[in-house]
Image: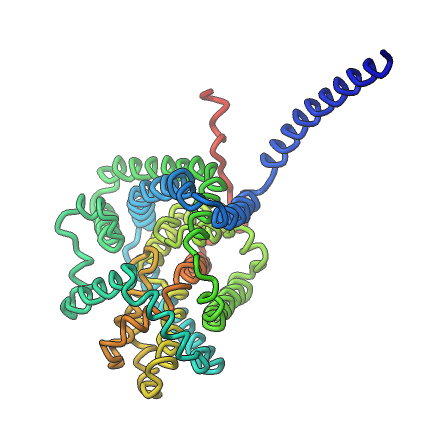
Length: 474
């Protein structure tokens, strides 16, 4: 009887402890997540997403489960970011230009922005060529490996799609890129998220507002100012979902890697690209330290949520609203600068992509076309990669489309192009994630440099949270 009593007592105590600990652990976890910085929450989501993806790779039906039930949440998140990108660019750029009160300032800002972007892109290409020529990652690849990669990826839809897109871009006239800047229907440009056309329209509206009496311009300027504030608040709300979204995005990326043997054989090439990208990050940090006199660690901490989202989405365009929020509210760049520099950067500044193109082009030649590795061809690679980066779309894997154009510019045999793309296709997505991170970091760096040169960099930026006005309206 005593033993039965003790057994029942023990069960009750154990049940009480489980309930007590569960309740309090939930409170502790909620408090921890509430007080945790956003970049740590996103990083936790990324790590858990990667682990979950690897686990699902080993489970029967795991890939289907991730595709059907996990991936959609990442897609919803990206769609929300794209939803607000166009109104954010429009509102911030029009408001920024109208606030300048002087058309000559627009010229000054534009020239500095474009010249710095071109300079950093040239440095990125030179770093890429230097690494790939020193390491020579393609020199020791065996014929068996080449054949295996060729058999697996040469006819892959991803490879053939890139070739078709590159062919269409190559067939366009020499001034097509200039023509594409000027929209014939701005609503169609909004629907297609044609960044350069939207930027042109916003600048056109902003300059026109400067040229009419201030009294008549004020209602429209106030409207875009209010629209900008509203969209930035939407960014704060969307970012509450970011840790869960990157979990979904990373889990989906991991289940796509099903041939680790090929990944390992391409490891040296991948490490060359990663090493070059890290050097570019270091270069940005030097610029921040030397020119703006800000701490590199402080810069990385403030911009890290945008970097982690760029890594997760592989799209600098989708990351643009978050980049603008971090640059304005955390790095202290005035809206009139960030509203111009960042949308332009998301379109024409592709430092990570340019570095990748230089390494990938030479790597492919080292493997299947070594006779093409001449000094003159590498000079052509520098120039073509620079021009291609300006026209490269801010979407996943656009760099591979531009790579085809870079290879064709040096007379790379057309029949070898599918093999060349197949060589690097297996590791393109993870490298795309990393080079997009560099692209976004470069945009933020240049915005700080331009703001500093114009006296528009604040020492004490004011951070805004999603619930700043919540107490008044709840």
